[in-house]
Image (cartoon, rainbow, N blue to C red; front, side):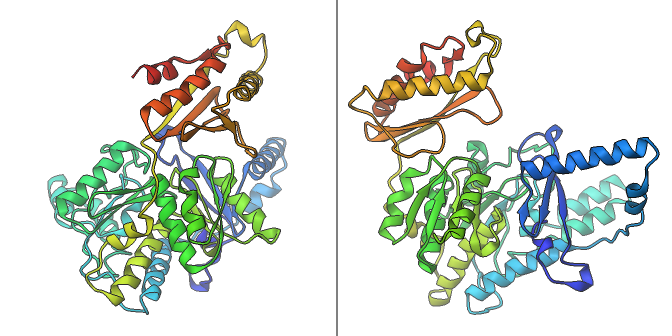
Amino acid sequence: MFNSTLTEDEINHLPVDGAIMITASHLPYNRNGLKFFTSAGGLNKADIKDILERASRIYEDSSHGSTQELEQASKGEVSNVDYMSIYASDLVKAVRKSAGNKEKPLEGLHIVVDAGNGAGGFFVVIPLLPYLHYLFLSNAPFLVLELMLFLDQDKVLKPLGAITTGSQFLEPDGMFPNHIPNPEDKTAMKAITQAVADNKADLGIIFDTDVDRSAAVDSSGRELNRNRLIALMSAIVLEEVFVRLVLCSICLSVAHLFYDKGGKHHRFKRGYKNVIDEAIRLNTIGEESHLAMETSGHGALKENHWLDDGAYLMVKLLNKLAAARILNPNVGSKVLTDLVEGLEEASVTVEIRLKIDQNHADLKGGSFRDYGEAVLKHLENSISKDEHLCKAPKNYEGVRVSGYGGWFLLRLSLHDPVLPLNIEAPSKDDAIKLGLAVLTAVSEFPALDITALNKFLQQ
């Protein structure tokens, strides 16, 4: 949708002035909403608020007899455009370019894709037989069109020569009957890892529902998501240009790799739009930045107009594979995992959500936000008295503290009465020490539900 506002193609009415998609991402279908795009990128909260206010005024005016704007809107024309084919063709061209314009740079490489019944099925071909069988049993002529649409989805990997047998959950189904399409979800990652093993594939790719996030699995079953994907993308980008990398507030464990490779790590607050906007801001003040990413799998590149495009992230991995196979046709996904060799990963990584009871008397009629801020302030004061702990000198959200070889971050959710606590440590004992430091401070706030934290500490 975003690229449709940039692509020059007069025959297909491109570029468009604006684009809208309906999605709930990996959330249940009853959370569907709208994403809006212009050539400047995705619209933010202020933009959405303005749209709603203007729409409300038009509605109010029409109910009082003023229908001028509604009449103008009704004069528009509707055209159907297969933009997905144009977009996919651009992805194919990018991979071919990285391999010296070789027609099938991934020939012989076995890549399985798990679309999680979301929108990512276009990356691979869908087998004919199951749909012919379904069509025969149903005896329903209208399904012929549906069959033709699915058969037309081999738009990226097959044109590049890849083998895609074993790809799974390619049919869009908002009920998500197999697993939640979320690269952070353990069940989802287990599904693509199993598919790689069962098919003896060279690489596995998994997308979230609307393909703004992605992850991969190498031939040995090693997951390339979260910090590993950030490290891998950073390594690939740093081969191309010296850059500043803007990462979310829980990505510190990959930072040392950037310094080794000549990059500079800029830690910022969580939220993919936050890190993207920060990268854009840094560029405007002369601090060159090319990658903005967070552990959820959202990643945006300057070269791709700062769009968090999961398909483009995977194309960057395919580019690396394709280029390597020009020199050695037998190269597999090891060329990717070699880039993150030496990544120091914490033995314990956990997120614990501490809920605020908004009906508790301790709030004294105040908001959960005020209460949460009071918890954070008290924690900050408590930490300053502990010689084993050190508060981060510069932090953009919550309270981030290092100690016992690891760190923790306690912050206040933007929308919900929740204080998420992230802990990363080299051992369970060290993680417990960090958790106890938090527990000691927050136990003085009776409206805060610390059940989950106590459960973690007692394991």
